[in-house]
Picture 1: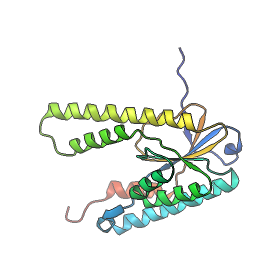
Picture 2: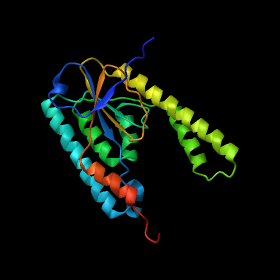
Picture 3: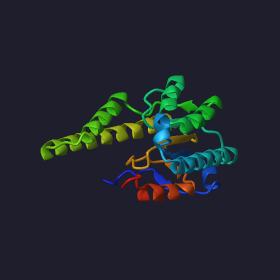
Picture 4: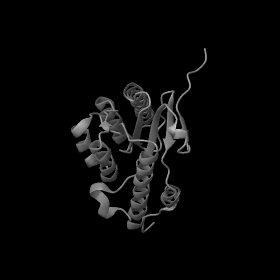
Length: 211
């Protein structure tokens, strides 16, 4: 039995995206400081600002050339509409600004997560971060965490497949290290500003003062 093809993540031309079919723009979520912004290095925050400015410019350009955004998906958001917007506002101010703009233009904010699975994965992650002494406990909790994350990602795949209709354009804000197998028949266009490579290098080489 042949395996079902999954969505491809490619850097495709604008002309390609004018073809009929379901389309999804993937925007990597970057930490922007939030309530702890004062503790984050200013150099990093400056790079992140450039990143989000370039993401917004690219999305506006695609909207003008390809068409409006019909649906928005955001990691950790398990409810749509105005309630979902409030959740995003507390998660990331820049992805919130972009989502709000598309929402005001008629785009639909979809609930892409299962709230119980989100809470469970967060709890397991906290357990792992607690510095466990037992190797057996560490193995068990790691297994529970991985299984929960897999369930989350499978749920996300089903929700996108169910809600993104024929010839619609969606956008998803999600962490880079996800393993989501996007539904077949959906073209995935990764929004990847050049500054993102610079941010990766900065994080790789970053050493806190005093080390």
